[in-house]
Image (cartoon, rainbow, N blue to C red; front, side, top):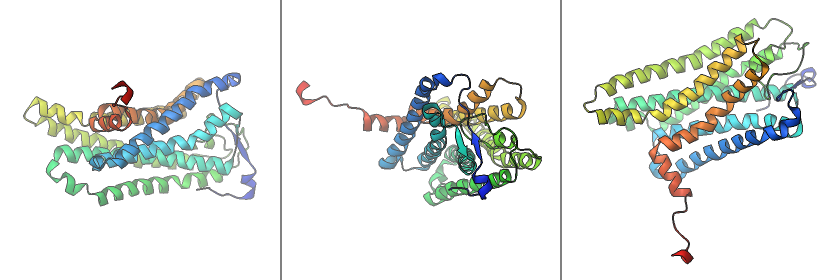
Length: 319
């Protein structure tokens, strides 16, 4: 999707920012970033490959995990060109249409991830609180509808943002604080009132991330109530153990998002490095850690990965 605007806007550009004052070290700084991007891509592709090729993993829980991996992969690829472009080629200039297009994908995929985490919490709720109806409630058809509704809701809510930003005349500095485009950063450069953008941005956050996090909390309240009613300690631990990976994924997503939002809105006097680090943590840590957490904490995923990629047989010459 490329968002097209009038010719006067197409000639304008923004300038992205790496680590200011450390430009001579950008080549070295790119090494850990490149390693993180490669790990994110390989980790999430591995999860997708394992789920796709192993029929025993064709269950609701793993379908939702595949959605999460696909979303994390898209989020990673939406920032990779500009981040590594700055570090490797000092390519700081980005056209406004390209910037708004990147913004659309970053924010849309972030909201999709929130929706997928909510769907995963519903999956855990049904599995623990209503296990006898699990397969009849979470049918493949319903799972597809949940996935499509997550994408549709997110895209429709984010679509107005580029057009709200298009209204502005950017007479101030065109230098952005990050290596990619975010709505909050761009609207700060506008000369006119940004109250409409502020209100709409808060509305989007409230009816997506706010509602999703509230429903996730509610689902785990009901899960905890159901688990505490189980007879034996072993049953309680087994039920809770199936939720650990998802709880980690929820915390990895929401804590950096809340932190970045607070820094953007109330951290004007914080050092610039804090803004940069929070932005990278927000977009890179969840896609990096989710495959690792699920590979370590989910026995079925861990066993399939070992089975597919570990060389367990010795060469004949050593037998």
